[in-house]
Length: 79
Image (tube, rainbow, N blue to C red):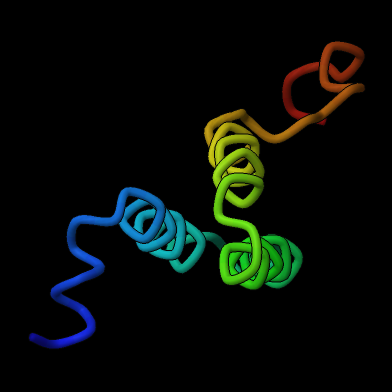
């Protein structure tokens, strides 16, 4: 039995792989900062899987949100 076979059933590992796919697809400007957050969650998963799962939930939710542009309502189209 290979080590990866055991991980196939692990929910946290599956979700971490999905997060990795999503981070990999980001534009270069955003990727470094977000990849560091992802790596910190992976490190935490080695020590405290329950806490890592909670942080991963927050992380994935932040990837789903549109970029925050607080002043976009003040700008006119074309600016």
